[in-house]
Amino acid sequence: MNERMYNSFVYDISQKEEIEEKGNEKEECLCYRELREGELSQLIDKSYSRKYISALNQTFKDFGINTCIRISHFLAQVMVESSSFRYTAENGATDADYKGYKGRGLIQITLETNYRAYELYENEINKKKNKDVVCFTGMLANKQKLERIPYSVRSAGWFFAIHSSLCLYADKNDFIYITQKINGGLNGYNERLNFLKKIVAKVIHCQEREIPTNFNFKESKAYDNSAMSFAWGVWHDDFLGKKGCNYNREEAILGYERCIELNPPDTSPNINRFELKKKFPHLLVEVKSKKIYILRNKDVAKERLKQLKRSQ
Ligand SMILES: [Zn+2]
Image: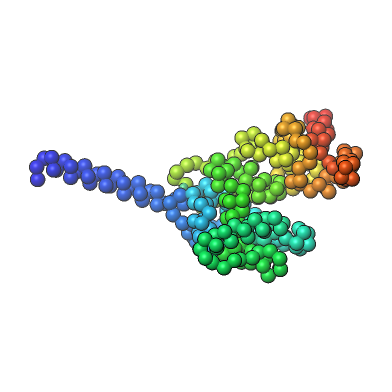
């Protein structure tokens, strides 16, 4: 072997080793492989991890929920929505409570418009694959398909990745926006956050990036949304008795002030209007053309700000 050959031989070997080393390291995290049953069972009961692991991985693959940070956010939300995978139908609610369509699937899709949008999505795929049409609307048996694998899991993947484009916000680590998109408010905020913290600290160890779990409202996409800002105020304001976050006067003020600053034109239906109307009957505004009374978020925000600042 001459010197030149020898050098190139040495060079090739070292380069190969370096690649292998990197490759093995990357094998470790969920940016490069599937979730294992042993990991899922650190979060939920073994009978559920066994039942859901393959449907979950298939959904991750089909909907591009395929990095550590995306899977972490998805699981943190699903854990709360399904009470740790125990329920795929809303407990204590009937279909009549949601105009015929109560919460179903791991992420609890509600209302006819959402059921129909999901149905349309699945059937576009079925058409391309020459598969039979699937129906989730109409009779009860159709709706109940959302309570079982694969649709209990796929509907959650669809809601997260397609309907709400939440992979994009998972990539930005925007927990506050993701929570509001899924819940419509901040119910179970602390619980969702605690699951995310547990997942990131104990179950999913990403080697590609850090996943911080302290969140700032001003850095969230929710800060640019008047209804979400209003909800941030309401849920942190002990006067309204909402449960999910810790009551905090500064955060409540921040939310209300931002809602007023964004100057929403009217009401935003993302929280229980009936409950609010009872608390602020003097703020109701009559809309004569429609013969109804409405409550404007910014009017509630203004009134609560006055009170909160007075008691400071
Ligand atoms: Zn990773």
